[in-house]
Each structure stands twice: as C-alpha cells, then as structure tokens.
Length: 247
Image 1 (spheres, rainbow, N blue to C red):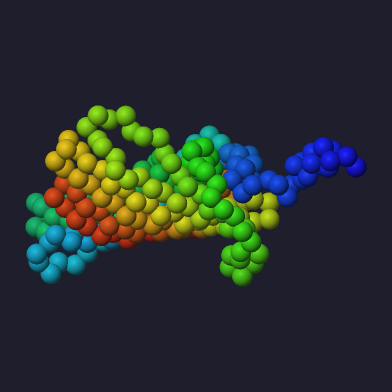
Image 2 (image 1 turned 180 degrees about the vertical axis):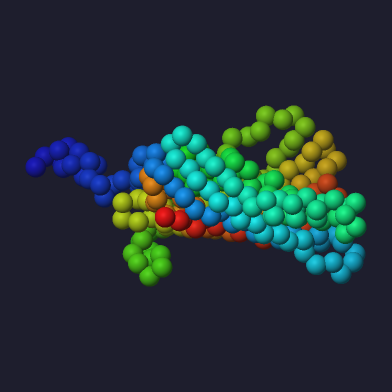
C-alpha cells in the first residue's frame, strides 16, 4: 500500500478521534425528547468569613417534584415548604428574619432545573470554547473509562467597567466507551476588578455525576464548593443539587 493511502486510512480510523469531538458527537443527539419524572433537591450552606460573632453557616434544603417532556417543564413545590420559607423571611412573625430557604427556592428557578434534567445544550455551549489538553485511559467507579482534560475559555464580557485579571476553568471529564460523559470536575479561578477600586475573587470546584435518561444527559448530582471575596464580603459555600428519577 502506498504511503498516502496508508496515511488516509490511519487518519480515518476511530483511534485518531479525540476526546473533545467524542463528547460532542455523543451528547449532540440528546436533546430531551423523552418523558422524565423525578425529584430535584437542593442544599446550600454559606459561611460569612467576615462575621465577628460565632454564628454558624446559613443553610437550607428544599425538594420539588419535576416533570418534563417535549412540551415543557413542571416544577411543584410543597405548599407547606413555601409557607415556611415566607414565614422565615418575614420579621413580623416574631422570629428572627432568615432568608436562606426563600433564597434557595428562588435560585432553583425553571432555567436551572431545566438545565439539570437536560444538560447537553449547556455542555455543548461550554465545549464550543474549550480546548483539549490531554486524554488517557482511566477508571470510573471501578470500570474502564477515558479521562479527558479541557481548558474552558469563555468569551470576555464586553464591559468597560470590569477588568478581568484571571478567568481559568479546567475540566476533567470521564467518558464511557462511546464518549458519553459519566462524571466531571471543573475547577474555577476568577479575579476581576470593578471600576478600579473594587475587586472580586472566586475559587471553586464543581463535581458532576451524569446519566443518560429519556434521551437526555441528566445531572444526577452536582456539588459546588468554594470561596468568594469582594464588595466588602468574604464567604465560603458548599452546595449540592441532586435529581432522583422516578417511574
């Protein structure tokens, strides 16, 4: 066989496909046409590092029934939970004002829940500005997997009042044999200044566990922890979000 023909054959071989392309090819068809039912649970914990008192972390947890199909998404919160959140945040009830639960329910918005139960579009958006760093054979939960490292470089925000000093996002993604993501970790490091005299820093880590259900890439669990400093505040947080499928 002549060399050009041999080269063409090798380049056409699946062995030369890279992990970034394999992820795109695997999740592009997963656009959420199926029917999915389950429970979405959110837990948040935040500690004010600037507080001079011995106050513990603000924490809250809440769960909602989720139903989604090709026509739309339904999120159902228990009425008693909503009443408790409103009462906690209302100082006229005679109790100390506490907004953690109300804030948690508010942040568990329809777009956020929709993303959790159909993550492929968001993943593809991130992959559009990602670069492959390396890939190697590895294991995940005791089974063979491929580990892909990516640098994620989101587009700069066109804001004259914001100067971004650092915006690093490094992802490690474990893939099954067909390129479907099984799990991922993403480390974030952000440093910026606002209007010259205000600064902001954030260092965090996200951990994802995925599954393919009802023609969707579902985030079964996402854990998010880190520290933030800026605007006169410094805090540490640890959050988790889970989706438990139901028949």
